[in-house]
Length: 363
Image (tube, rainbow, N blue to C red; front, side, top):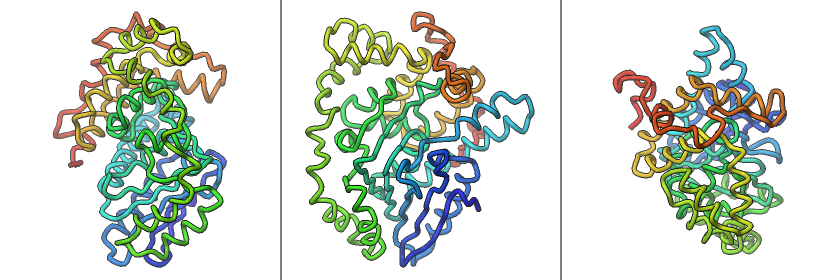
């Protein structure tokens, strides 16, 4: 068991504490395995009524997967490096599926940075999840900025966000706050960070049957501090619906280019910095995922991530962001005009026959 993830039971509550503050709780394979083991153990224990996932640091809930690990192992020529990358994504996506179908209330205290893989361990299935945000919440699925796509079930939860908000967040990679997350349907309640100790005490003391109602009642006095109606996304909603309803990135960018508003100008500037190929792949992913189950979505994403490392776009993106830090990735292709339908389709061609897919057992 990893000391980067602490597990304990208090009363009838299983508590998982992410404990890698120096890396903003970026997930390692050992962390994924420790979480999976705890959740499987607690799932079948009758005296465990709910699970709460939190951080030991106020800076981050979880900033995603360990992208430096991806770079190091992706660059390695040794078989071991490739195998570890394969294991990480297979087991991480299996964990996302386990959380989505968890039969007990699953409370995610999304305090601080919540990105990528952090979203995957927060966006549980509708029946179980209780997603809590604070004034420190900084939420994003920023993968298009590192040559990847919104994985960990991102196709599933972004495609089900309100209207085209998930499309906007997925293809731009933009960060949002608490009120935005509530407005988009990516969080359930707001609680000030100073009140989290009291909330956690409430969870431990509450009965399983009344937990959601108790948390909602506890959060009610603070609702005006993160009003979804006054969120930044709410102010941009009309423009987002206007420009992000198409099925092709060229269509989206043409629509934005014809608009002289400040929103359109800033959004175009953002998108021109992203990987042209991965924006196209992401949009196709979101449209396909809208009619998929979570299991189908994660199987698709498992194929997609294999193709990403084959292509090398993610290696270049991580290099530019986290290794050399020159913030000048050399995307391939370099321009949107060079992206062909065949290039995009390649990311959805399964790397395995159905009977051999590493996530074939997901229902």
